[in-house]
Amino acid sequence: MTKSALTQIKPFYLLLTVLLLLVGCSDDSSNDDDNIVGLQINPSSLEISVDSPQTILFSVDGGEAPYIWSVSDTSLGMIDGAGDNVIYESTTATGANVIMVRDSQQNVGNVVITQN
Image (tube, rainbow, N blue to C red; front, side, top):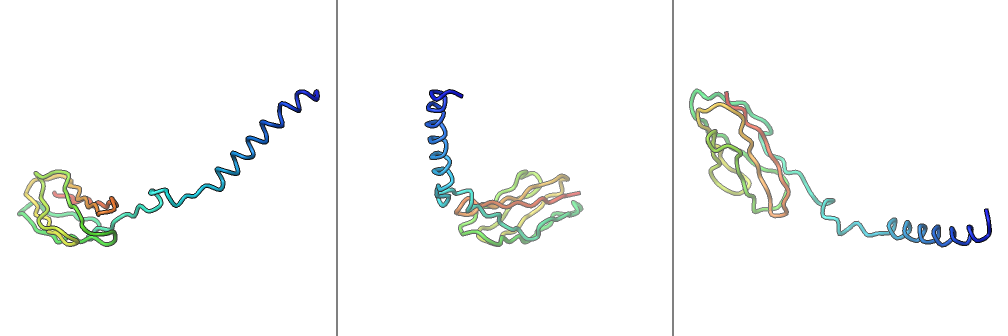
């Protein structure tokens, strides 16, 4: 390799080394993904009969209040109440309904209720 070729390569490697050092020394504390917590819903799964409407108590563990609860299919059931304990009121329709909860820090949890 000629001397001029080596002279051109050295700045490239120097720049590459500096960039790698900067990336390796970056502060990850600003990364919000590290702080995401999955919320635990109890019961964690449920299969119910559709012979008659049912009411089931659900609670959430973890996260920070206030909590926002929702269901994926209101024709199968609805959430009644607010806070860390709510009541699910089922209908007599069959299917799978996803109960979701989100806390004030945007952490989420969900559970599937199978109605048959």
